[in-house]
Length: 199
Image 1 (cartoon, rainbow, N blue to C red):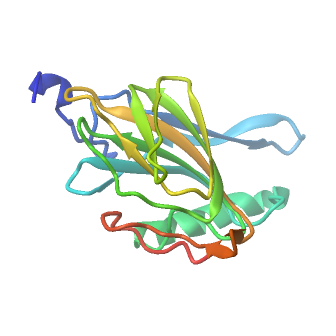
Image 2 (cartoon, rainbow, N blue to C red; image 1 turned 180 degrees about the vertical axis):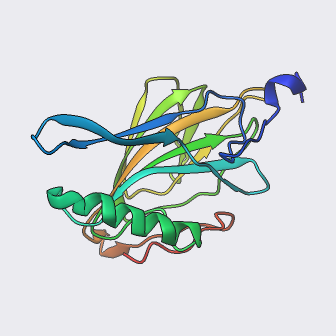
């Protein structure tokens, strides 16, 4: 398996599994005079999946588009959704909204082939990861590369035997997609452990 120290997964109160740096979230707002402030901040909270080989952290969500920032309506909606997510009810996509999710992939981990009904921006933050498509195409991605997933069947594979990989995703709900007369709906595959998105 290689250098076990490199693949070790320290776990703290945040639930982080990987040995990658902990991330911190800053949410801005306005004071009474309309000046910009940081209204709250804190470390990412991680949720493990698939026998601790995969970890998700939902940094922020919106539940309508365009988002309503008046009177912190978006913050209240996010906090409600995070409470639901804590109960295991949030799927990969938030219907009529967006999800900002960070994902850590353990060394040697391959998620199942899956599709979401969404337009996703996936940015590699750490390591290398292969994007595998159901056509058989395989595209190796490195730090800084961006995958724009347009409701396609895909799989993420971390081929390293020693290093975790990390991606940041922005998932946006989209209209139903029809290709060659077939409506392509969400397909979570066999090993996600996630509830359906409901869109």
